[in-house]
Image (cartoon, rainbow, N blue to C red; front, side):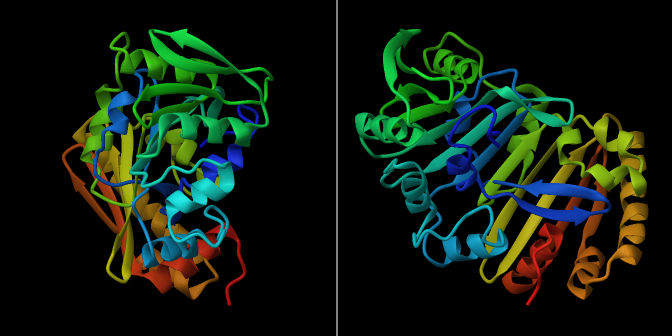
Length: 326
């Protein structure tokens, strides 16, 4: 996610990056994206978190995404799909957009505000998309060349940097994130790889897909009261997906440990924390959700999964977010 300290239009990007959070065993598991697309190939090496949103979700699917987010992360702007939400919130008309990939680095358990970026692929004209971002940031821009690619530098500190990666392909974010992505597109920089890419590629297909090599960012502040949080901080990586399947919605996360023994400890801690969490809940839907979570260990990977009818999933997410249930 793009923090407010880093860019002036944080809410614009947050609006189209849906994060479905489900508290499982004392750990808040963030769910994100679908099959690997071309945009992730342009993410630079050295990042530790990647989130991809399938922008082709339309109609009823978009309505259900808003429902799952409790009306907080994907505002209902009267739009029929995620691309329209992006247009309404940013001024960018992405046309038949295909995907949005966000990437960042972290400082311990928080996002590094100086290194965040988002890559947008769209069939709209490159110049029109650039102009839309410029209008939305309330900043003037100076056109430059970096690694032979067009880059637009904001004339005030609150604006996004904008880089052109290809026809209809933009990167928007802080200066180092944008210039690194431009270098990848120009063939002068390395793309994301290693444990982060392995976790991302290993996640199931979905509407939103994610991976991080900084699992501490997924832990709620109160996690240490119900589990051994160091086990989760020591994970090699975490990857997962939020998906829609007919009238059902699911979230799946793979916790990748450094060894089978460590994975066994994570699975045992998660099962134990789930029992503690269940006894502390005062909401029937949330209790049923904890009971329905499946925890499976194979080798060095522990998989957490939860699937439910869309209405049930919505109630659970609203409870987690602290939104009053009707």
